[in-house]
Image 1 (cartoon, helix red, strand yellow):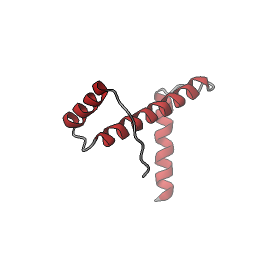
Image 2 (image 1 turned 30 degrees about the vertical axis):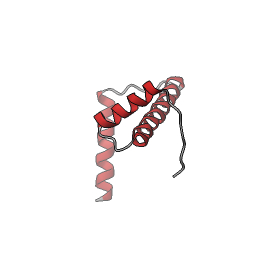
Image 3 (image 1 turned 120 degrees about the vertical axis):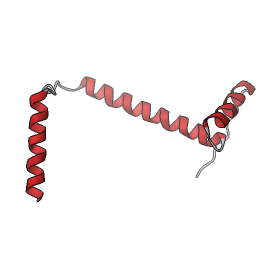
Image 4 (image 1 turned 180 degrees about the vertical axis):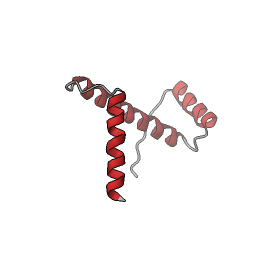
Length: 81
């Protein structure tokens, strides 16, 4: 694992220390890693949402769609058995 040193103003350092103690993190590094993971996940979700918004329209996911999906799953399960 690589290391990275960051400098924080006293107010932010106090905030991080407070979050570590109140939220059950073992160290400030664990807290910062969690923030980075959440930000990475947020960016990935944003990218997927934008790609979906830019894609062609699909058939509506209505009752018929889900009935067909259930049928395909049942057929696939019977084929495996």
